[in-house]
Image 1 (tube, rainbow, N blue to C red):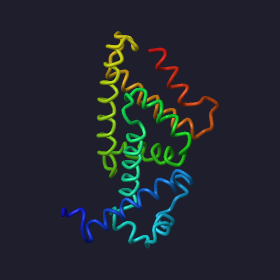
Image 2 (image 1 turned 180 degrees about the horizontal axis):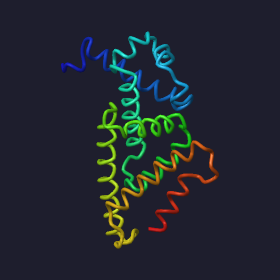
Image 3 (image 1 turned 60 degrees about the vertical axis):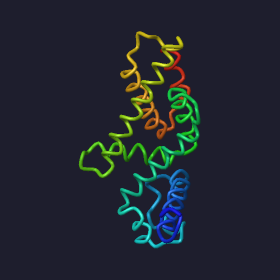
Image 4 (image 1 turned 90 degrees about the vertical axis):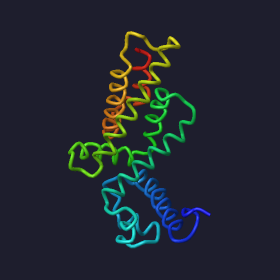
Length: 188
């Protein structure tokens, strides 16, 4: 029997997962600014202090929510290549505007190296950039993306476009973000 399958530790892990699952649902529906830790705590039968016990702070809770969102996105993609998966995620994001709002706000705030989630975003962007560049190289080898394009630079541009489209989507612009991403990929 492992430590994670017995006793208080297992219960703590299960409760933390329950909190993250509920937080993903509530924030997706109501948005980052309209979701309070008090509301999240009530949704999982805890006090606000009890909720934060599992994460340390509101900032750490929201970072954990973003990590859970990333994991859910990876599961949703399955074996799809990262470039095609990015389009699929952009398309999915229109259905979870509250999570887009959380991501956009938190990523901007985390630009400050003193922000608690700064390292999360540094690692996330590095990992995503590497995965996209690998996917671009694969597409180049298959002849579906020009070999004149530098994979690392294209990866950086795809992330910038994706993030920018997420921000713009909060202003109800006419363009469908996934269609814009598909158009960009067609140009490559």
